[in-house]
Picture 1 (cartoon, one colour):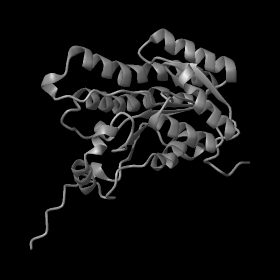
Picture 2 (tube, one colour):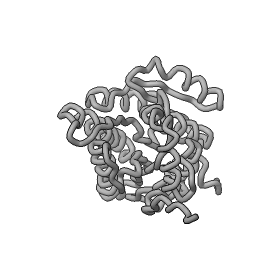
Picture 3 (cartoon, helix red, strand yellow):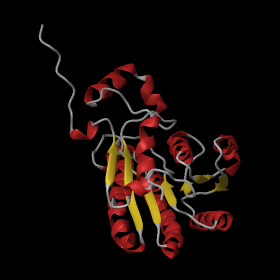
Length: 263
């Protein structure tokens, strides 16, 4: 009997949105824990370097084209994953996008892009994968949320709506599919530097302000998510479902910037 509840040997995990950014870090963590991967991007050719990296770790990696805004693309990708491996044990719903604008400047198309990708895409990828998990009476679904799942920020209206929706969706799916041995949880990172928001971190004053509001006094580093994603993908979280796990350095506590000391 394997007493390492974090061991993912023999498991197959789909991680969406793995051409760059946090998706690659999440996939890397699962592979290091023993999982074989399905990696996805709208452009499958862009996945070649990451595929080689995962294979250098001694794990298998199947690159697939997947556009989460296209229902047919979702169905084809999931079918190809099942045909290749014969099973899907873990889904990390990571693919997402953002449009940063003042609320008065958000367009109809901006709203649709963000919600269709982050919320509708998350649901329909989960639905397609769950059909196969239900047949096997086992599954771990990890929807990627954000600190904006629980807190509002100016300029992030559509994004916050999508991530708040992911949190609520996670609870609904957990109730729907728990009877089939499937857990559904939301992994919610705080402020991490990614390709999407790198320009913000070029502003030293903003970074200082941000760090003052984070109890641990620094933005997140990608490896800060490793333990959390492996936990939610593994047997260690077998009785955890419908939850939002914030990995945010404590900013969701509502910490405020410290007042300057009186001279």
